[in-house]
Each structure stands twice: as C-alpha cells, then as structure tokens.
Image 1 (spheres, rainbow, N blue to C red):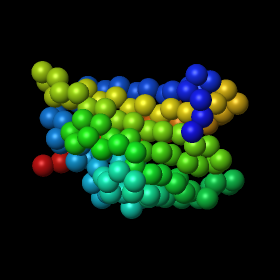
Image 2: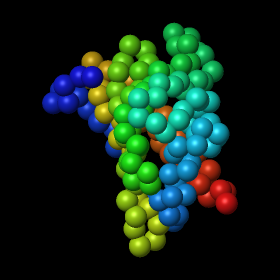
Image 3: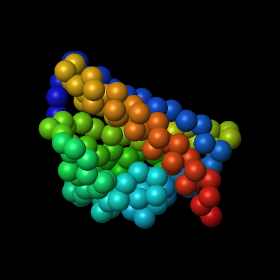
Image 4: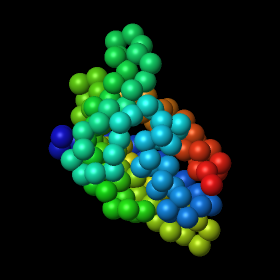
Length: 140
C-alpha cells in the first residue's frame, strides 16, 4: 500500500431508504455483488483472497485481485483492489439513519501519477453504486 499523505481517495455517498442489513446483503453476497459490480468469488471473511472478473479489453485482462481486510457486519466492509499495477483499498461504511442507511464508499490509494485511474474509478463507481441501489430496491 502507498503512503496516504501522497495519495487521493475517491468518496461516493448515498442515502438509501433501506435498513443497513439489507444493503449489507447486497455488499457481501457474491451472487448479488455480481449483479451490481462484477462476477466474483467473494466471501465476507477477513484474509479471503478473491477476484472480480469483467470482460477483458485492450491492455486489461478484466481481472481485479482482492483480499478482504475488514468485515464488521451491517457496518463496514473493506478489501484491497489490485489491477493494472495499482494497489488500492475499497471501503464501504454503512450508518443507520432515520430513513434507512447512509452508504459511504471510499476507494483510496491513487498516486499523483494515476489521474487516469482516478477518473476511471470515479466513472466506474458512480455506475456501480447506481446499480447497487437498483439491486437493493428489488431485493425481498
């Protein structure tokens, strides 16, 4: 991991009209994650190594190597995110509100020379979080 004093963090926040337990299921069940993020072999166990897999494109094999770093049920989930020679960290924090859940997603570790990665992540995560909201909406 890189020095946090010299890196950028992408932060996306959303208010969701659902309890944290429901949002947590979408963040931690592999089949639901595949619907809003990517195909994966995720398990919510600290130390579990897994991959996200997408369709390969020019100069990218479509694989993101990850390791679960923190699991605090209904509250916090964190995993490493390694792709294209970049190592970073994704953290989801869920906070109960009067109307549901405040979701905060942080993707940290972007070095100053990784502006294109940061912009790409911002575009991707905006789309992914929108997908997440739709998945949670339709869950029982």
